[in-house]
Amino acid sequence: MTITEKILAAHAGKEKVSPGELINARVDLVLANDITAPISIREFRKIGAKDVFDRDRIALIPDHFAPQKDIQAAEQCRMLRDFSREYDLGLYFEVGRMGVEHALLPEQGLVVPGDLVIGADSHTCTYGALGAFSTGVGSTDVASAMATGECWFRVPETMKFIYYGKLNRWVSGKDLILHTIGDIGVDGALYRAMEFEGEAISSLPMAGRLTMCNMAIEAGGKNGIIVPDVVTEEYVTGRAKREYTLYTSDNDASYVDVREYDCSRIPLTVSCPHLPSNTRPAEELSSIAIDQVVVGSCTNGRIEDMREAAEIIKGRKVSSNTRMIVIPATQQIYLEAVREGLAEIFVEAGAVFSTPTCGPCLGGHMGILAKGERAIATTNRNFVGRMGHPESEVYLSNPAVAAASAVLGRIATPGEVQ
Image (cartoon, rainbow, N blue to C red):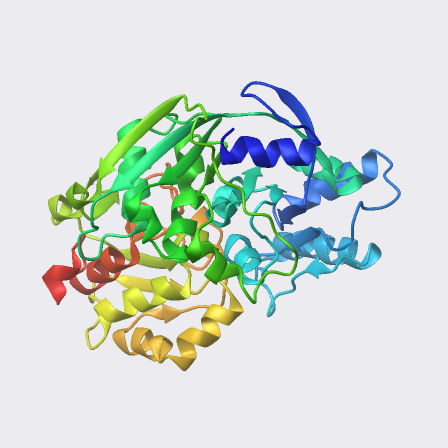
């Protein structure tokens, strides 16, 4: 079996599962945010559930419209708070203690290798970087899981992606996943597990792995996953809140497709409007003027991303024609950025340094685009109207390209400003 099949089998109480099989499986963690949890809470009450299955396995995180941007957002967030108090939930994270959910939960050791995690958010697939099976589901599935501790699944087929060779300067996990999505398309892995491996993955830090698994959904994937190794164990050691199991894929496991990539040939990559699969080398886009730069999100809001952007922009200024918004993904990352002097670098460059929030990524707040404006962002989606006006445009990149673009006021590579 593949690692995905082994985790699903273990949680379904079965010795073996096969692609296409329908199973019921116990979940280790259930997640929802201030947009999706209110629907789950209403459905939870509608089915007449008397209690939650486990007070310490349900995470409710207000992060999309938080800090609350308007009355409606405040009401949504209040539902999470009231429900958490009513059922004495141990994993409710109030503003000031919260963070962008998919950065916060791994950081806090609340997701561990071998877990089965579902979340009412499509980027729940992020946790596959830790060797867990994690996937986004509907709010009604979350309601059922909050009551029963179980969810149903169709076992996905698995695609294997092998990355070999050495990464070029500034090329990161973001570039690898954008290049991959550009190769297979936004439905190229539809309802399939995307298993990432190879020498380039083995040398990729956890931050880059989280970025890659985060965007599996942008290729239609059911989940993204990386077999645990030394990097995984170093990350979870001293952090994991629970015992964990390290699964691997068997040598004779069956894959529906295998793709190989020579990383020495993968350039700094940008996804152009209006699909993540519409990728081009960054150096070919120097004529594209930029109004807004966003560094942050569940894709690239970690301390490593902050450091990368700061290294590019240190001692320089954001272009007078451009605004730059930097959003560390959690309070811990915020503090680290302050202690390391990164926040000062951004502010002195003329950027905004924000409290943790999903904010502009989904067109929520803290950076909405006007008609005709263009943004380059380290976020994960660039659909029509994703970050504001339907006639605005969003380009996706890694933090180094985003920061270089802020300096020159157009899409740029780090080499152009250093």
